[in-house]
Image (cartoon, rainbow, N blue to C red; front, side, top):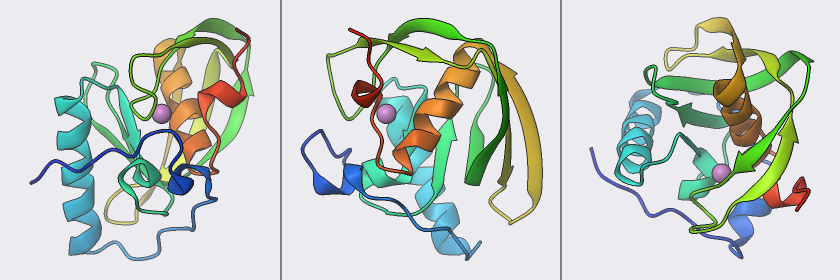
Length: 146
Ligand code: CO
């Protein structure tokens, strides 16, 4: 495994709409491993592929309950509202107030291409929304209230 460089605000790659990941191969596994290592080293709770310069639809998340890898994630249901502080590894040393759904249901594929569905609330729901936004070139500052 190897740490990757995290792109920061101003890099064009952070503003692109990413394409679906179609190959569930060794290369994907290597990048996912690197992304997890990079996220943990930076003390983050999530990291999306475009943040390491790969314009494909996948991300890793760990809000303290274990590593979650999501390939081609889609939010299929959401409810409620939470408002709180949010940050991003691509915008270091900054944070802002962002409203997100309190609960979300996400369907995605795992690293082998197997489809799964998860439901989450609170911080995990926030992280899912934040990372999936990255796959469409959206940053939390676009949704920031202050
Ligand atoms: Co981010």
